[in-house]
Image (cartoon, rainbow, N blue to C red; front, top):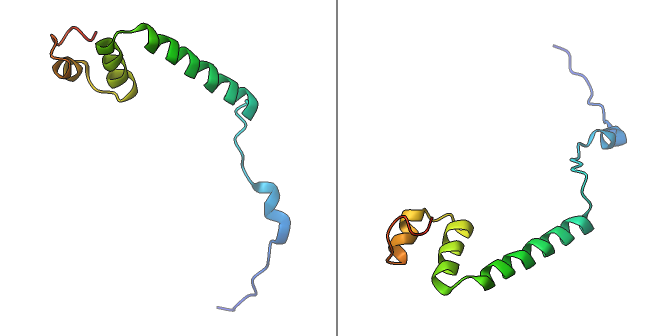
Length: 80
């Protein structure tokens, strides 16, 4: 086998970088996050303490409903 010299690609690879364009711009994403955060505060503010705890445990931390019921000392179907 004969040896051969390596060839440098130089800057030729810079045009081959793959990027994901999801269509949103950072400003739109920030506005969406702000509106969702505000809506979440409104929802949490309208709930009582046990309802708020059930919501946060289930929807934010993915605690199953029957476990939420045990934590709140309520029937397993109550968190639904």
